[in-house]
Length: 427
Image (tube, rainbow, N blue to C red; front, top):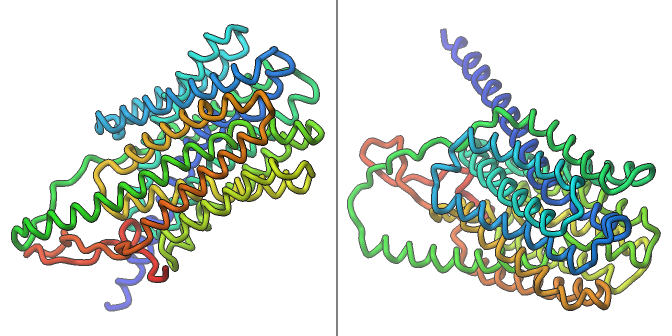
């Protein structure tokens, strides 16, 4: 009789792992469509639009800004109407709108219409991002913390695939074909992401042993200060990283053969693919704020390299450092917000990030008349400031948060589950 129990338990664990990986693949496809293609395919296409569609550098910056304004609108919708984050219909609608906005780009030569389409793509990509990430942290809460990182790797996969696609298309066709190919890729990813389950409705709060208003106020104040530092760091990251995310290919192509820029963007995607899982796995041993600070410093170096050196090796090293950190930084920052259990942390951090993305291109637009060097150096400095804010967060960070354990009928305290609330001890 005692031998019968392990088999059902093992079977349940196998089913749970299988379901988790199925969820990860669907979320990865959603993030690849929304971010890797919908957001970042603009980066390798914009040099083609400069030369073939007579798009000026300033107009390119405005198109990027329109996309980031749309991203902010989508993130704010997730804050103001939390029920949207739990809507399968909205997820599917956003994916369809995203594909349509990509396919419509070659239909016009109007900068105003291009701006409207990139604005629409930004709204759709933000909604897909918030829904997918909230779904990950909700449904994988009981699983190892590095698993959501593999879903974030979908962004890197989307960047690599779209970069390879543009690199192939530019050899025999023009910028229009590049947009249509991107729309087709996004449509294929949409099919894979179609049945992703959004975050479930929140459960009623667990009972506690008794009111402790003084302790609650103190804990809330400390959490608020920590989240403020995290919010500042992630917003500054949005300012700095988006300059490289938008203009890195064009900056590299100024001093290198044209294929190097597009090739470097493929390297960014390939480096990003495993990076989120790696940073999340490291978070099991070291504190997320410490890792966040390290990742930001590494990224700052990567952004500055093309501004300081014109060599192919500098371009490729820059691509590796940038790709290995920018998705990992999102994983660490959003995971830290979930660890602090700050209400609506994903939507709030995404909103701050998107504000930074709006400010970034506007901040460097006057510098683009003289090329991209000054813009990249400024962006690198902003990312270093984000690292300083992360270092402030690191001081006194609560590596374990004690919450009421829902399984205990008397409401006694228990330690929060590993997937979202525990941290490494070091750092």
